[in-house]
Amino acid sequence: MCKGKVLLLLWWMKNTLKKMMNSELLKRINKLPKGNTLCHGDFHPYNIIVTLENQPSVIDFANICRGPKEYDIARTYVLLKEAVPGSPVAEIYLDKMQIQYSDLQEFIEVIKGISEYGI
Image 1 (cartoon, rainbow, N blue to C red):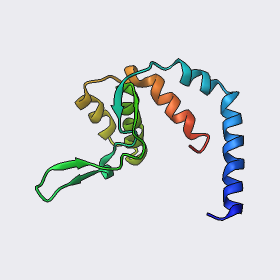
Image 2 (image 1 turned 180 degrees about the vertical axis):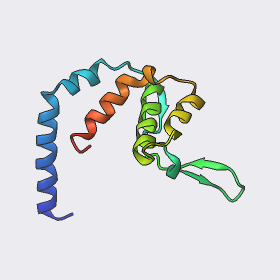
Image 3 (image 1 turned 30 degrees about the horizontal axis):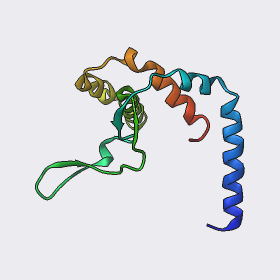
Image 4 (image 1 turned 30 degrees about the vertical axis):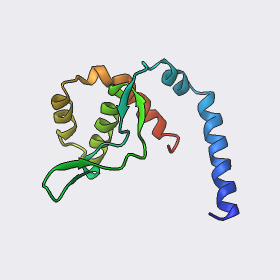
């Protein structure tokens, strides 16, 4: 990466983080429940492949973290809602995960709020 791009990236990060530090969003993030579940962080259909043995396999663990399972489920819900607007696929996913939207609402709102910062 050239020096100009690095400087631009650092400027963007500094300004974005400064805005977030003074925001209600950060307060909401800090109030979210903690957890100890292994979270994929980017689980969606394009990150599932079928092996030569015809077995599904999850890929792309670049966003892996430890946290509450509700975070990972909420992140997938948001990704599915954005990928297939108007489709019931996100609600079907919640049903299969045996969790209600209301159990995820805090996480969903924070995830959507973070996207306003381009993250």
